[in-house]
Length: 332
Ligand SMILES: [Fe+2]
Ligand SMILES: [Fe+2]
Image (cartoon, rainbow, N blue to C red; front, side, top):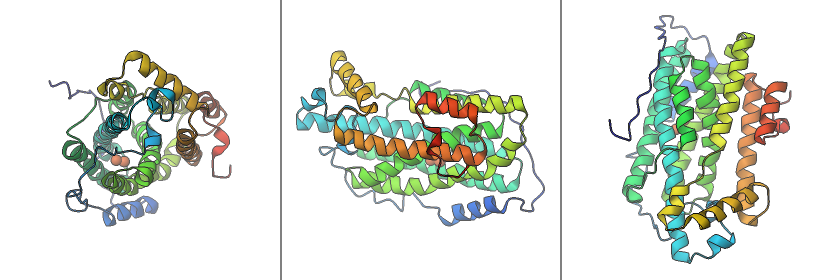
């Protein structure tokens, strides 16, 4: 099998649901919105726009280590090259996540019990196919086919999501955690990317991702409320693991190597990155990161509260990971 393909074994219980009356009107209306807001990646994106790789793709402030001594030593041309590699690395991670999401949702069509949820998941399958299509086309046609491999952490997360048999575990991993991260990132890219084509693509994807995140908030509360204490603990442990996997181990080592930086220079970037995470370092980079982190953390905490996963135990997990559990925008 090619290095780019992986086999994951799983046992799923398909529910052939022959009750067609709607039991969850909020999920039906999400399905209506999904049908109304479909778009076509080949028709609705202006692929005639060229991408000026000499200018870079993401906002420069997003490149890890921006404003630090080690990156200030690069001339403008080399920094733009790094920006392109860094952006392609990050887009590659999103792309692999889109593919994994498509597979997980195709499983969800089978295993969610109600037709309200099955109908919505059927729309999410096509949404994720479109996201995979649009991002892979962007990398292939506009960035010279630079596709970086999946990080170990994201692979571990998707191996678990795709290998698990319970729908609510998949939904916590995918729609509640991974897509919350994706929504924050796509929003930031749609507002700040240097490349206008990428901005327009991210804006389109973002509208779909918000719906997907909505699926978890609408479908999970009832399922979580009926779990046994041991199932609840298992789901809480998985939530902690999923947040940890999404937020860590995402350093684009290969992007720095691609522009010829040596191990010592890359270590310098890593150190600077840690300082920025602590609030020190370049003011611009810190500002970007702060906005992004705050929005993402707030959404994770708020959604955990909405679905019934925020309690004393999980608040402790969040604090360990560096997320303030008091950030929820929903009154307790
Ligand atoms: Fe997606
Ligand atoms: Fe999605």
